[in-house]
Image (cartoon, rainbow, N blue to C red; front, side, top):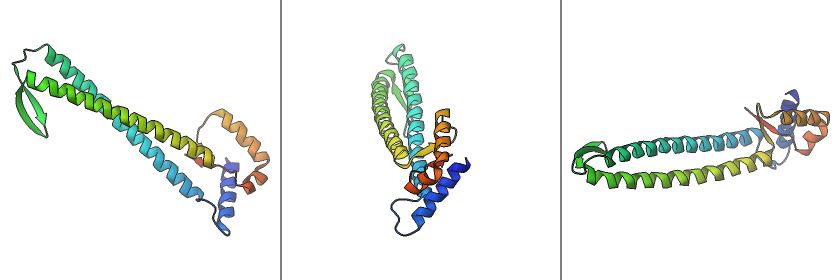
Length: 160
């Protein structure tokens, strides 16, 4: 761990002298954290919409067993509206399809964000705290030649 902090210090001291060739370690970490946060918010939105799809499915299955002329109530824009089952059922099925398409879109965006995060991690050699044991072997090998590695700018950024 001491090797990580010293290599980060070497990188920031190298970049502060003269022209800056890239973003500072703090900027790299901030951008990485922002990208992770965006991906997490997409995942939570997708999970929320999946729950809505499940709710729609339950209601649709329940209403299919009911007389089509029976009255039911639907919440539209915060207003409770009285309709018949035959009017509500097609609208619910349509909403469910639209939500499913939106979830697919979010999942595609999450995959793209995941690839972007991986590329960013590789570009700036970002390692997360608690990553696998194979990272520990690499860090001990890097600490043996840590002086030369830090001066070449191959020092990584450790993100918690």
